Length: 75
Image (cartoon, rainbow, N blue to C red; front, top):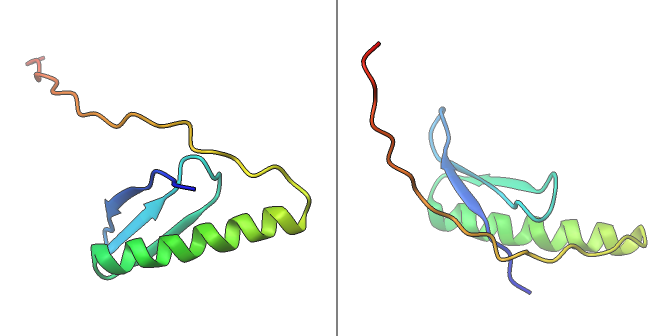
């Protein structure tokens, strides 16, 4: 299985990641590589807990990530 993750710069330094398809699944790290590795572990643990509870494992709905440029308007 593959999951989309969103990586953010943390205010206090390093990075944190969220997994949109898995509500409540987050992780962090000092580098992007560490954040990705930690998030992989978090996903595996999250899925394991869902399985133990007999809950359905959500699938990634193939999120589309895009950027939109917005021109600022003087007020």
